[in-house]
Length: 266
Image 1 (tube, rainbow, N blue to C red):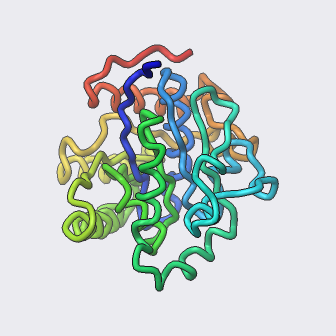
Image 2 (spheres, rainbow, N blue to C red):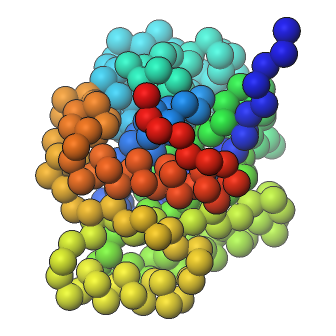
């Protein structure tokens, strides 16, 4: 039996700064890909497990998570769970994942664990999106070693470029030392509003990084903020919200970048 070929891209959604819409982007971009008919795996690599709960799954109800996988106690396929979004599956997190950073520090393959386990399922998906915690510690390091590219959400606020510069330097270090195939997949401007500061930051980022910045911008939107409390991605919570339309536009922009014709959502 033949299967449809997959894009099989692994993207880390990362920024060492918190509050820039990393999890919001991970959950909603994954949902948008699935709505366009792609098969997607969302990897919740943050011990806070916000991506897991944001998809309506209670971390406390799970029999296994990425903790057991990275500790070598379970196979990744054993912990992957279905979501309410057809085509979107989740490798969930629990608070126990925080212990992994301590447990693995003395292991020779500590920063290679995630890459090893994702390679066993990569060909099953068009996109594997990794939601990273806001730090440059062992777990985000694992994500960058495993990824083909990094998507950096960037809030349009003061000091944005300074934080982005540190993130870019960190990526370059990983590229030189551990993952020569790693690339900056794109910079996504988030929480964009109509203030002069937001506009100026957006202009500065585009002037500095040019075509690496996605044309799509994610607006500051109350529906995006509300959706996680209902355990739903924005596309299920309010399909007509500006945030929903923005993430669908981002998915279409990425598919065009990949040389594919974006499909209408189901």
